[in-house]
Image (cartoon, rainbow, N blue to C red; front, side):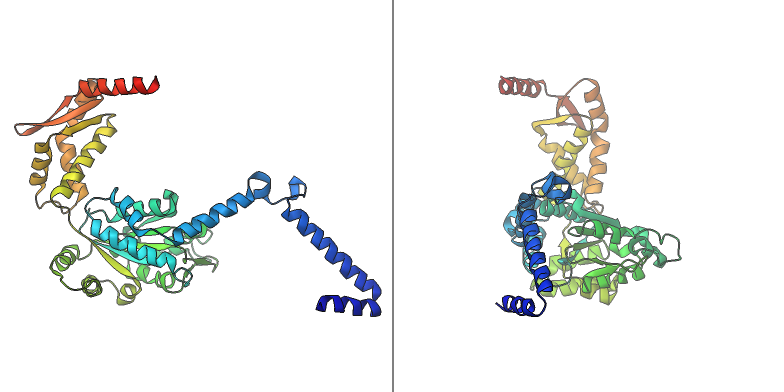
Length: 388
């Protein structure tokens, strides 16, 4: 109503100007109608409208954002447990925390800053990678940084860029470039304790203020859609003992673990920015047997061989686990080496003989690999029936 009165008044004092304003408004309304209705020539349409279904794409992005905002913790935990062995309780806790933090987005901070601690080879890095694929359905949403490469104070420029006038100032740092190109991702800072303390402190703004500054041009890169995961082996044995002997609530356990990390030279200001610490337990018993079986399957696949149904003799798994005993300080890596030493020659012989399916049996003090022609013929029959 106010606009109409203004135009009427203006028409009485300056009729030409009033006509120009009315015609401009009409032209703008027509243009907006044509654009929204996609009636413009293809060359001046939105590229998504021209080359794809823009409305459908907008709905897909909205659905994806809504899906992440309402994570089903039980479903996420179930899917991750199928990929990571021996850390069920930790995975449940992580899924619950992620559900809460995704629901509370918009606080100008990263979605979460988690620390995975425990003995080497217990699945810390593997779990972070699995989370990236399960949350974002794309492994490209994982930014991996080996922090052992940043053991000197000056090496921070490799992550955050170099100021103008210094070598490398023409390009972005690895971290700022990764988050600029893919902001909704997991940033995995592997073996964080091996980076220089000055490098640690450069992350404080990222975790506290919700952005990092690229040194080369001063640009601010948002971290509010990222999940930072630090992995560390520092004080791993002591932390495992704390977890095994602890009887109180989780908040008290977290404080004790952070105290142990403080003694391991983590700066207090860094620890105070970590939202939660998750402890990874050493692999034991059936969990270790599962890892051995999976490593056998993985190694056989490298030689184009498959394990027959029930094809690993129980004695093979029991003896391997007992032989490892308490020597699994390297976790899965120790298991992989032990398995490789036992069966590689047999796998080579089996492949050379043209086998496809194999069985592993215990024969005195060695593991013998035998062909399984029945499994192979059964497979061929299944394939024939399927194709017919």
